[in-house]
Each structure stands twice: as structure tokens, then as C-alpha cells.
Image (cartoon, rainbow, N blue to C red; front, side):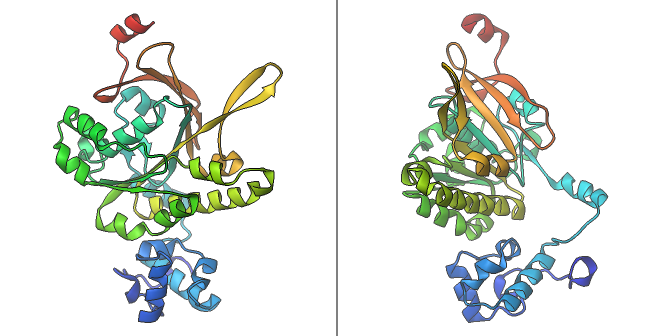
Length: 330
């Protein structure tokens, strides 16, 4: 059933959905399905793990989807619905322009580059900026930060918050942080994040970095298929959450040198085609010739042209490069 054939009813909890008994609700919560939004994005196969039949799972998912109005629609209706997609400022006007106005909600934006290129700095800045009001480029919400390399520093958040005129204590209180110790733990955190996201008005989900654990744990070509399968599952969970809660999904990624041309090397991100196809917007970061200047290159986007821009990383955070900077750093 689709569109008008579905009963238009809003459910505020999974227990309200027809067919979800208290025992089924308990099993669903154990699997990480704590909200109606997460059930609307679930697959029948995922619900089978709760001991639910295919038919029952189909009915539950359909009811949840009707509650969040997921159905076939015309392209003009989709265009109108796209007006609900919001933009989060990066802190740099030039970088925002490169991204079509900022970091887009309901999609995954991936920043990749070598060590020190600014990936985690952009993630930190986004955690501050998301708390700004919409008229200042924010989303008026909190951030969820999944840290896989122990790179998150609240002291850095305090610096950035002060420069933006925000109360540092309020800003750090609105960031929910979790350290992922393994790839399985990383997946578990995201799979059980829907309740935290809803209760804390999370509008930004950060995974920094996406591939570090997968890269270190699945070594060798014989483990490549399993690694890619898990990465695929992980990223699809991330995009479901971003769409369900109209949030920005920001991931950072490591790179590797690939000797594709004789006597030369090219830098490419980890994760292969799985990450490439699932990340809607991909940005390659690299250091400038000297100083705090960084170069951002938009590598792929569903509708934006490739391009480059400069920005800088200072103690204040992410900023635009000035003419004075250009003269000083060449």
C-alpha cells in the first residue's frame, strides 16, 4: 500500500504501532529500534531478528512509514519536500559556496585527506555551528560525535564556541560523544543512536573517522568482501538516521597512496566503491604550501560541479582566507 491507501496516523512511540506487542517492542529495542523513525527505515530482514514473521514485519514497517509519510510521490512534490532540506555553515563562506550553501541535511558529506589536512577540525567546527540559530547558519540543535581515533577535544570546542559568541558550557553540553573501540562497537553505537538523537534534538551526526577500525581489523584480500559488506551496512544506517531526523551526516575518511601511474602516486580514500557510492558529497582536503591554509576540492556531488576553494584553520576554528593571508603565505 502506498500514498493515500495508507492510514494517515502519527505514532509517537513504537508501542502505538499496530501489531507491536509489549514483548515485540522489547525485542525491537534490543535490536536498536527505539523510535518510529528508525522502524520506518528498517528492512524486513532486520526485523526478522526479533522473531517476527515476514508478513508481520511488513505490516509494522508499513505502518511506521505511513506515520512519517514515506511513499511514492511526484517529482514536483519531491521538489517541494526538498525545501525541508537545510544547510549548516562550515564557518567558511568560500567552503559553504563550494558545497552549495553548506553541509546538507538528509545526506552524507565525506571529508577525506592525509593527516593534518583539517578533517577533524571541520567536524569540531560543525559541532559548534549546528548550535547556532538558523539565521546564523546553524540548525539550532545538538551534535552526536562517534570518535574512533580519540581525536575529539572538548577544549577545542570551547575555543571555537567563544569565537562564535556562544556559551562554551552550553555548547559542550549539547554534544553527545561516544568512543568506538572496534568496528563492531562503532556499528553498535550507530544502530542504537535513534533514541539519543530524538531525545537530544541532534541535528548533526559525526563519525570521525569512518574507516579507521575497518581498515585495521579486516586485513588482507580474503577479508575485503566482509569489510565492504559491513561498511555498506554501517553507512546505510547513517543515511537512514540523517533522513529520519533531517540531520547532517558528516564522516571523515583516511587515505592511501595508490601507485596507478609509473613513478607517480595518487591519493585515494579508503573504502572503495561502497563509500564512494554512499557518500553523496565528497571533499578532498590537503594542506596549502605553508601555514594554516587548506585546500578543499569538491570531488563528487549529485548536482554540484567540481571545484576548489581555500580556507584556513586558526585557533578560532574554520575561517576564510584573507588577502593578507595570501600575501603572507603565498
